[in-house]
Amino acid sequence: MRISNLKFSNEEKQARVMATIQWEDCDRPDHEIFIETEEEFVQDLSLNPHSFLVGCIIPALHFGERRIFLDAEICPTLREGLETVMALMKEWTQGEYKPLNIEAKTRSVVNLNNHRRAGLFLSGGMDSLAALRINKKTYPEQHPGSIKDCLLVHGFDIGGVIESGMKYHVFDRAKMALSKVAKDAKVTLIPVYTNIRHLCDERELWLDRFFGAVLAAVAHAFSSRLNLVYIASSYDIPNLTPCGSHPLLDPAYSSYALRIIHRDLALSRLEKLRIVADWEVAFQNFRVCLANVPDRLNCGKCEKCIRTMTELLAIDALDKTKAFIENDVTSEQLEQFDITIRHRDSFYREMLSLLEKQGRDDLVNTIKKMLAD
Image (cartoon, rainbow, N blue to C red; front, side, top):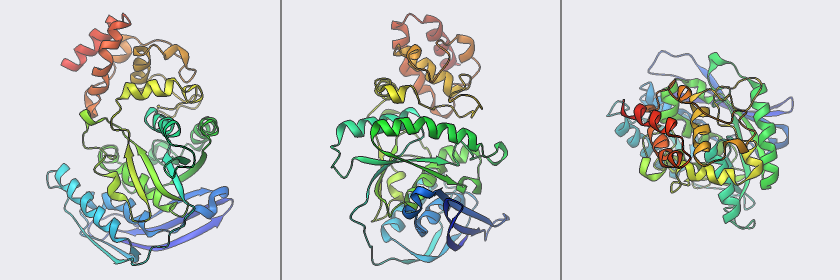
């Protein structure tokens, strides 16, 4: 793989950094990838070669490329981290992914801006909202680890799958809801747009190995503004599993100038929900749904919605949020899904004792049966 034609464009109230990707060992067309932001943050977007290297490493491994050539300087800290990434991917794929050569010059001087600050990727889901709430309650505002910026990224669940369309109106709705959260938390919400997922938007690859790398790629593009970026954990310590964002993976995408932290591993899913339920603005504006329906933040019908609604029932909070129109869940709704795929079973097991206390034997019996099948 060759990464070339790195350039910066500033047009029509948006700024974009981009590069051309050429495949060398597989029959795939050239692709121009980009990271883009809105006019207000033009001065914070930088043409950082780390963004494109990190964003391309997983697709290059997936398609069997033998090298990545990049005519630019990279930090030796990142180079070492990517060696860890490749070793981990080899292990997770039972040797299917072969480590490749990174052909790039080594950067010897790091120019650091002393006014940089901490950021967090904020999707609107329970993991990232809990991370923001904990940080703002734990860190004094003057502490360098206190979150000042939140990055909301188009090109993941919204706009990530080419066949589903870009759905900018869905992103705008999410941006509007999360702007209320950002204002309450006294942080700046930074909208970002990228098409890096389009290098290979196979769902299993994206979820199991790829999405954390794209988060890190975006973070590097804002390294002139940020020196620390948090990624909220998807699983807690007892339930860790190979995943596109993982505590062994995310920090390995760091450079000397930009530290990436995978956070809140000690918290279970229900503990995070309780934290968000206790934060009124976030609890009325969260977005867990991946269906991207036209008229609401959460469709109330997909597995993730039904699961979250059931969790909220378990903590007696479903009827207290307007983020869901529905105030109940039925066994029939649960039975539509396979709740054991992608390590979801741990989320459902955690609910059982609380649902029993709520007198919801119908849901308890259904979940137990589905877990046993």
